[in-house]
Image (cartoon, rainbow, N blue to C red; front, top):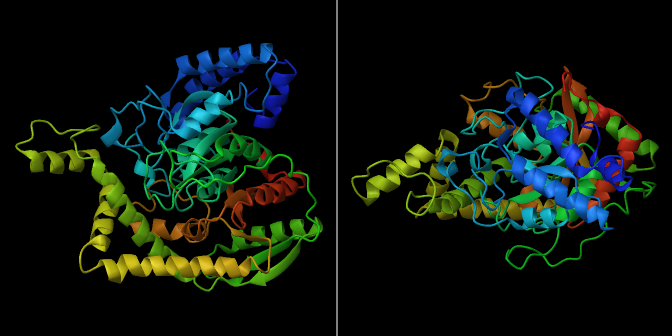
Length: 483
């Protein structure tokens, strides 16, 4: 059962080959047995899962249907779930039980999805390795000595190890796509505003976006269908009709114009990954796609701009965690200032403290114009590059990451080296574009991903390209040894 995709589970439940309750029990037992190796879960919600599974079976018995009805999933631990710990991977929120469900959680529950638990993540989504979590690092199931990517590493590791078929995740600068590449999954960051951020604990509000992590493009289409849509509770949510993402999966790629930016193939890219990307291009050409070299001239400025904007927004968003209203509070404070200082100093880990300080500095009087304002101007230039490129091509293709997954602890002493691993993913967040990573091969036994970017609200186009590619390749079917 654990080897089935979300689409296969939907068909099995519809054909009454097994019940949601049976499947849920199998997967909960598998998580209990195997997750100690991975540390991919922060909380298991066994009672809730069995209750939801029984309810889904009852709904099916009454004639209801739906691809997510009875399907087991997990939520990244920054989506608020009513009455269940929502920790954001931080000591600061270790004791926090959300009083309500995030819109994404509520929508998927209404569709009949079964929540198995909350997955581990970099603290407050700040990281590219899932090593900054207060609950310990997550291990990559392809090699337990390597990182799974971050910040959605728990969701990625759990799905890759076949502990469950799919999971929710979030992407601020590549936090869905990079873990997908490192663990041989398909991961989709939707257009900014496509998926509600209400109840999703914020890191950088103008960059964060929720999306699906699964083994196939077909499964991502199913999960995104349940997540997407306008939400009046979220002022950044866009009132745009949600298409049937599964309906366009079978479309032909004949004549599809794929742009390949020359800036992607610089000295920083592992040549073995470059070769796998070229192989992917050849596969898509066989399917009728037309390849064109393009340029994204401002890409080189994206990382410094991102690492001003994101920490600036984080310093503002995280100011609410002060030891007064909820979350961690220090013992016996001398006065209010001592309460603030010690609660935040004890509650936040080193990476979060580093980014708060960078952000506060960039927003301070005298530095706002020099750093934050300039970074926002670069952001506009990055967006303009993409708009010009999409006048010539339908999709942009390139590597998801410059290197395969590195060893645990390898970049802990040099945060900037870890930041540079986001070079190919952060531009989509700065511009608000949809992006997808799909499996493209292996380097030294570790998975590699290829990234696709499309114009606003063209998630269906990305899923179509990925699905057609996956019909003609088998990278996405490979399973890590021991799982």
